Length: 468
Image (cartoon, rainbow, N blue to C red; front, side, top):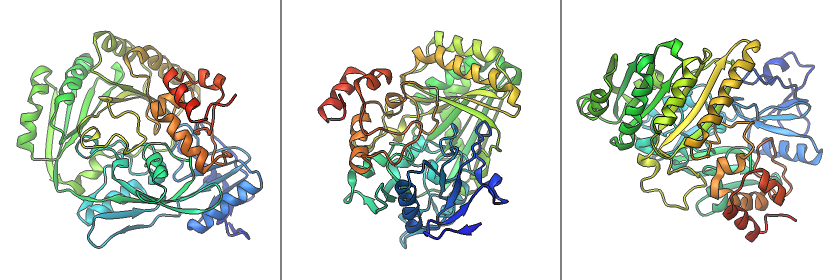
């Protein structure tokens, strides 16, 4: 490794012995060979790196941990600006604010914040770096009781397309703060720190209920109606596995004691008795390793969807049929939303377009053999397409899908025109660009290809974002 003379950070090139490790992404379906991987050590080096790639016309991608499921944090013959070395974490004196660098591992953040008696409601994978996780929303195991991670984002430091270091909060560049709350990563600049509102947390009760595969869809049906009405202190997700796995399960976290949770669970357990059930009350800090999921580098595909209402009998039959002969390593996951995702959130607070959804759905696949790619990818594409009539058409941007042709509207809904306006203001030349980056403008043909509704097209035209 060598220090770059332009102070853009430490640079790893193909002749470096560490290059193969440095270029590797979590999802091994993507095998890129960048021209260089650059490791800034702070905001000034990150700014210099932006100016270097911009002024030399070098394609680039931004990476914190390399866990983007569609490989958007890598590329061939360009620069990867890797933010993993910005790993600082600081809390103010009254423990109401936490400032995290994009390179902080989620598991490290939970442990450090818990040691001070607080937390943020982020995701469930301890080995991802927080930089790639925040800006799309942040759905995790506290989503119903505490909301999305972006609902606790109160400020950030961002490097814009001119290499300027912007301090963003509710009083400075407030439009950029709004866009950063749900507008997805990598669209407006490079974030070098995030400031979150920190809140205390005490004991919690973890729970898991498991059914055999034969009763899996019936259990899902009972669960989806139960979670929709559940106490907002209840957080839960449901996994439907292939029939060969002989299980379906829900796991969750309740911000309260076990005896109260037992009562709250009774509508579900009476309607569809599980074959096993476990409850355990413990300090929140001790619970973290039990509900986080560490997934090793492997071949993977995540296909997102959202449901507005409980799935009807036709949708449930479709799920049952697809899981009956599904390949090993796939599953359909459901996060219960509602609760704090909807409560007390001003309409103009964030760019997140899916607060009214009741379920965040993911069709997921993990496998190791490249020869199994086709089987798994066809299953994931097939189930998403057949289930689409039962869904909103929206998709969670933190689980991107290259195969979505309507991704601008699927990710951002009616918020797209305003997000494009922010893009045009801060990055009119599209310096920050990748396969599914927010554009600064669209042609009428591109709007049609993206499946944008007439109302969104009209909004684009009114804002001057629809080109001739």
